[in-house]
Length: 381
Image (cartoon, rainbow, N blue to C red; front, side, top):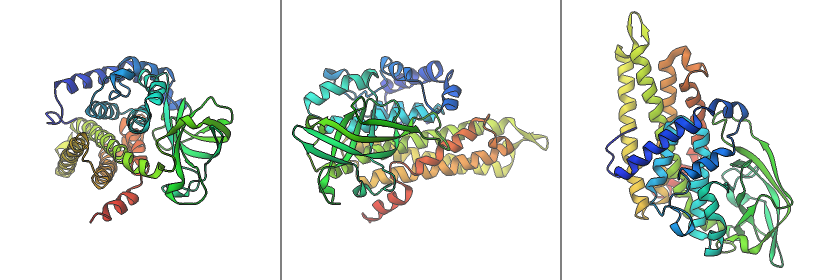
C-alpha cells in the first residue's frame, strides 16, 4: 500500500491499523472455511459493527461516527489489500453502496428504522438491480410493484445479488407503472422476513467465492408504501446519482488488490531462484516489475484525485467511470503478470496469487462492465 498519501491524515492511519488487526484476528483464521462454504459466517457482521467498521459516515444521531467518505475508502482499501476479496465485496455493498442511497433518499423515520442496525451489523443490506436477461439494461427490468391501498405488492426475480443470503434489507429497483421508460421505476426497501420473499441458491462463482452472491425472488410480497425510498418514479435518476460512488469504490478495491498482488510477487521473485540466482535479478523480470510499479503509482494518484473530488461533491459520472475502468483493467493486467512471474506455482490455489487472479476477474464486470464505462466516458468527449 502506498504511504504518505496527501488525502489522508493520522486518524486514517490509525483506522488502517484497526482494520489490519481485525483482518488478522477475525477473518484470517476462518477464511479458508468460508471459501469452502461459499459464504462468510453471519457473526462476522456483528464483529465488524462492534469494531466500528460499518457505515462510518452515518450521523451520530443514528449510531454512526459522522465521518467523511475517507473512512469508507480506508476500510475498503485495507479489506481488499488483505487479500480477502469476498468479505471486502460484501462489506462494500453494505457500507459504500446501499448506505449511499439511504443517506441521500431516506426520510428521518426510515433512517431511524434502518441505519442503527446497519452500523452495528444487526441489519445487513443489499441492493437488487440485475435481473436474469437484463444485465446492464436497467430500463429493461420486469420486477413490478403494484399499489394496493397503503401497500406495494411486489413480484419478480433478481440475480447476482451481493449479500443475498444474509440480507435483512434489500433496496429493490422495481417498475411501479407500465412502460419501459425510466420514469416508471422506483426504489422500495424490502425487509426479507416478509411473506413471499425467497432466497434462491447461493451462486457458485469463479472467484470471490466467500462473497455472498445470490438469486432472490418476490411473490406477492406486500410492503408498506412508507418503505418507498425517494420519490416514486425517480429510481433511474437516483441510481445515476449514486452509481459514481459505487464505481469509485470498485476502483479503490481494485487498485488495492492489484497492489497486494504486486507486493507479494516482488517478495516472491527476490526469493525464487532459477539458474543459480533469484529470478528478480533478471532484466525481463525487473522491467515487468518497473512497468507495474509505474502503472500502480499513476493509478493511485488518479484514485486519490477522485476521492478528493467526491469529498467536495464534485466527482462526475465520467471521472468515476474512468476510475473504475482504469483500476479494474490495471488489476487484470497486474494479476496476470504476477501469475506469470510465479510460474507453475501461480496456477496452484495454495498460492495466494492464484486466488487474487480469480478474484480480480469480476471487477471488470459488476458495477458496470468496462464496455459500459467506455460508452459513458465517450459521451463526454
